[in-house]
Length: 335
Ligand code: PMP
Image (cartoon, rainbow, N blue to C red; front, side, top):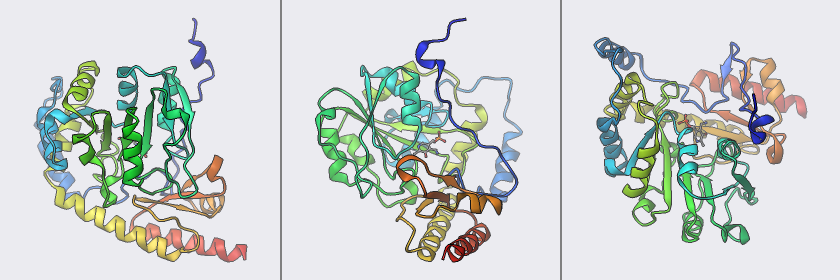
């Protein structure tokens, strides 16, 4: 059997072993959905036939999402999580090159390499901001911008995003964490038809296990994306639960508010080490990965340009208490 040359030594996504302990490593919503809400959903799901295929186009879910973000269903294409929307977008546009701004989310380059595209790395500056200066913008590219950025936590300045949009390159703006921030650039969809915004129910909506993401863009672009996506990619369960969650935004908002409060509590505790965050995680200038792991607290160890730092997801209150106490011990022992 002949494997494609570019995939022979393909570096797969690094999976981590699941161990008992406190998991603050995947930027999930640690609070999850309230039990009574889940009970209600599961009760309703009892009546859902599983022998039937899901709708090819889950219009109701697209309408609910449109209502949620204040646009129309024609602006929305669904994905089984946002991840699989990336290769779909790469396939649709005639470009050989994907521009990424590291340190950023790993999947932009993962899919680019898998699709045989060249990855052009334009690092963020000292304030973790993007730059659109330079020759790389003159050749047609797909530019991936993450705002708020994983793993640095900051939003990009609006004028810099507009600068990139003005180059006429296709811009994929990943707003997976937008609900934890006051800033979103979704409104720019009206003005720029070279913009696609990615959103997900995996973070604020506490539905990472369900795999529901969506892309927002001009009706023409969205129509083309919808035509090349595989049918039935969202399960009947995902569709039903996602609709229910969108009908209960108040419940979701409560957990967002709690996460933001807890985030600020942790940042305040480690003022000398914490970077500001518009997300549900914090980048800390503390090389405490091993120290925390020995105490069964799992966080993300940073590599490359962020070597020596950790990224911690905001947990439940008692988990954050344990994190804070362990990190204070770590700092105390270093002195
Ligand atoms: N974008 C960013 C920036 C992320 O951090 C993640 C998940 N860690 C995703 C997208 C993936 O979201 P989904 O679960 O919808 O595939």
